[in-house]
Amino acid sequence: MRRPTVALAALASATTLALGIAAPALAAPGAVSATAPRVADGPYVALGDSFSAGAGILPLSATANPQCSQAAVNYPHLLAQRTGRALTDVTCSGADTTDFTQSQHPGVAPQLDAVTADARLVTIGIGGNDSSVFTSIIQQCATAGLTTLGQGSPCKDTYGSSYADTVRTKTYPAVRAAIAAAKARAPKARIVVPGYPQILPPTVGCYATMPIAAGDVPYVNGIEQVLNAALKQAAADNGATFVDMWTPSAGRDACQLPWVRWIEPLGASLNYVPVHPNAAGERAYADQIQARVGL
Image (cartoon, rainbow, N blue to C red):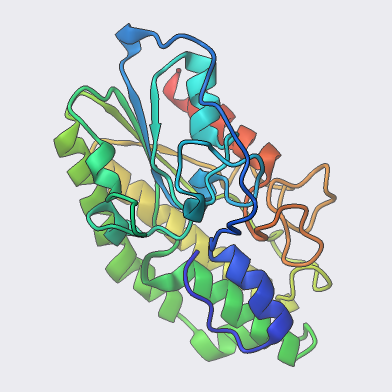
């Protein structure tokens, strides 16, 4: 996600990674697919943020800027491998909708530049970083949870409806406009908008590894559901296909055992970027998109 503001040293270190800042030394080759593209299907273009880029999973893609922390086994690569489509993957950790029309990093073109008229499939996984909502809620609620040793609902008590209001008034129109822009560039493409999976369980968290106060667990979940509802509506407004990741990720949140979870926790993360999908999570994205779209 985006830029860290947490003062606590340990949390700042973890959330800096969660913001999608790449570790330059962690570079490894990756391949899109050894399968010949099926020309009739047309090219596939993947746009999006760190959840789509597979931030924190190795090996890194050989074709992406290392600052984007794009994994060679993220769901766009998996879908391309499974369907034989030619892939252009410009997903980048830390991206928000402004990075669709401007350069996010030196040498990284605006994501919409990759969308051309011959594209037949476009996935757009974006919205969590807009107005720093996703970043802020993890940082602020984790910080608040630490101050109360996991008791009460300090984050909800402090921020109330502000995060949800921001999603409805700023994120929703921004994502709607981004989808519309992609559709205008590739009018014959199937536009697919995946939502975000569950980060926390419904009511009882895991303070040792996700330092969110017990009373703030449903609060954080509620904001993520507002975000997913905004993405679903933005997709519907443009005739795009929304893919629900919330429902299938039940019981796969960051509080589960390593071989069960799809999201890595802040503490004891097995990825170098915590609070993001692991390899199983990226496979789950590919599975849900493939089933929903019929690829």
